[in-house]
Length: 187
Image 1 (cartoon, one colour):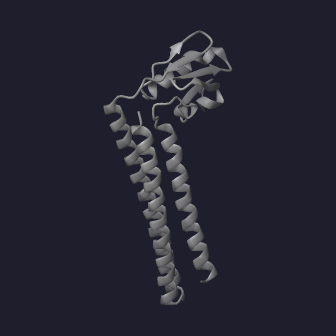
Image 2 (tube, one colour):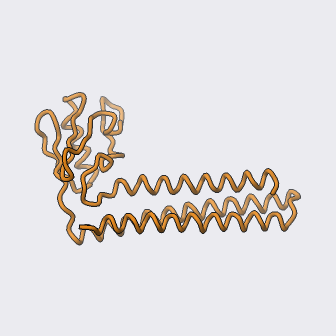
Image 3 (cartoon, one colour):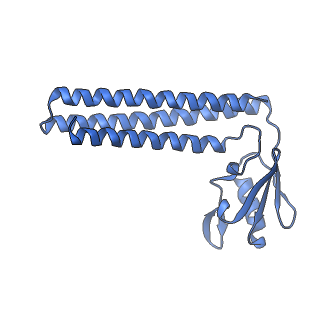
């Protein structure tokens, strides 16, 4: 395999690996009944005029599987954090206790579990689309190498390798989705 073909394959692998990492990060945000600080990841707070991630403004911990405690380093932004959590529409109702926010994570109903499974399937489908886009880009690059003088059989081999890589990563997505689905549906 030529150096350019190997580079193309490595680039496709890296892109697909990043898609899996992104999917796993998104799955951490989908709660499966147990409280976790990662449930609040991605929530942005208006911190003195700058949009700042919640984890950079407060200590977030889980004293037990049913609650999250948010303790801001600057007590004056407690109301701002509460507003941002409510606006994130995560189904949480934080209680302002003056120095901390206490979030009781309600147990999931069967209907909510099915909604979360649907959300997880949607995320995994978006990741599959990303994987297929990486495959298309790599195949386009292989075809352009062929136009620039790469032998046709070498280009075909590269495209076959990219397809094998795509199948491997689609399989990984399915495994991650099945694990998350089982986690969500476990009462």
